[in-house]
Amino acid sequence: MKTSYDYSNTLYPGHSLPWLMSHAERSALLHLLELTRPSAAIEVGTCHGGCLEQIRRRADFVYSIDINPEVAAKLAPGMPNVDFLTGDSKEMIGCALDKCMQRNQHLGFALIDGDHSYAAVQNDIHALLAYRPKRPLWVLMHDSGNPECRRGIAEARWSGNPHVHMVDLDFVTGGISEDIEFERQIWGGLGIALLLPELRQGDLCVAASASKNQAALLKASDHYPSALRRAMRWLRVKRKGLDRRLDRIPILRRSRLQKNSSDSK
Image 1 (cartoon, rainbow, N blue to C red):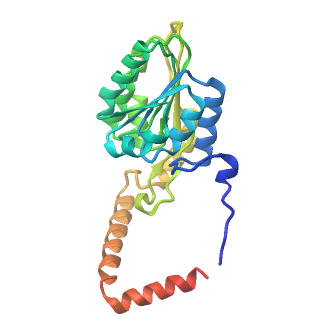
Image 2: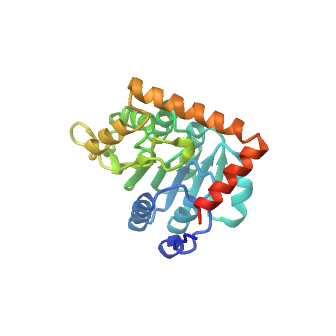
Image 3: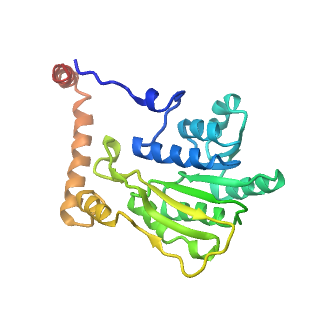
């Protein structure tokens, strides 16, 4: 039987909730939080709470934003320094910013990891760009490797806020997903932006510091616009459908389970 050592608890002491990020993404995020130790932070898209668990230990106060009301019901009792806001993120971000002002808090960190569609990513960024920082504000955007998210980040109205001094789509690069549900799709990666109290001098350039890596990933993924890729994706979908139908036949299902059990030994 194959075994592997789970080193997550060694790298992330106290880690207990599911945290849907790669080790590179986690390390980059934790380094930034340790560096800034923000007075206030915002997380858009809390889901299971693994990332929020880490943010709240390094920030004085956190605003958690998620559209699912079960998130607050499950996590709030164990996280006293978190204000859980439930609803559409583009509206809840504005609510969080208003609360920061009322409570005289200085926002120093934000993570955008909610709806991953082009429009939703831009809505979240634009809502956050209404903020005028009194201290440095670092913004991370998860799944910047995914083509639709990446396009949403790249084409957002960053230059409209004169406090934005830097944007890079590739603070951490994405990769081909290991999840069978997202087979041959690009996910992961962290984009980064920095807002400063002083005004920017000159034009803003949205950087893509790993553009060659992204281009290579795109060619190897199902996102690449070619007839062959579309045909291969269609065949995989059909095969999965056939497998599900075959699993309904008891004798074939038993045979498949016996084979999988034998292969795992």
